[in-house]
Image (cartoon, rainbow, N blue to C red; front, side):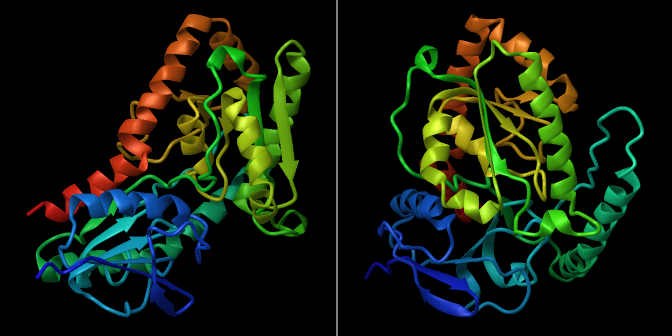
Length: 339
């Protein structure tokens, strides 16, 4: 008898069945996208007796373990290797498959008074990763192999449909919609977080770029916090589907859903720094290491309409090949089947 695959979620010690064919509600917002990923996965590896568990837990024991267990580990901004990695067949992980290289933005080029503080904050982040690194070293020595981790794209948080507007007919040239903080009040702290400091500098540079290029059509909207931005997802998608260039500044980490959401609509992402990963490298996105140079980057892209149209088509292809649910579902299935 075929043994159907099982799907569960484990958030806040609440272990329940996950109906990947349901339209929601979901215990975690990213599961709307990953439900579609595992629908594609289930079509490829049907009735294998596999048990997929979606969780945001990185430490502690899982409710179940074994060679038939696959874990989808979400939302770990520190890029750690989960403590249970050697107890399961595969850990499918967003936000770094056990790695988070140190990074501190060095723009603007003049000495930045906040730079020592941000540098110290990044040191603290790396120190928080040390227990995970030690577990990996000891576990790898004990098992004779590294933990079975598969890095996957962060996914599409705003995973709702919108019509694909022809690139030439779009209303906006440049779009950014986002928050300064994750939680209300973070910007009032005596020592602001990395995200607050980076976003403050980004928004100053963005306002200057908008003033310097009055002929460029900008769509700029900021909200109070990350979670209040989630409440305005409809407006966000409407604006993005009508935009050509989408600005993707870093937040608490280098990963951002906005990068992949832009590719989905054929927008050209502009970023300051990317994490490592095959789903980033080679994409049609454009790097802007210093946001003060944004007007020059915009001029170059909008001044070459034929080249920009090619980037638009390449963005749609990149999404289909590397980020779409069928592509990520196949990536996971291939990793499970790998000897």
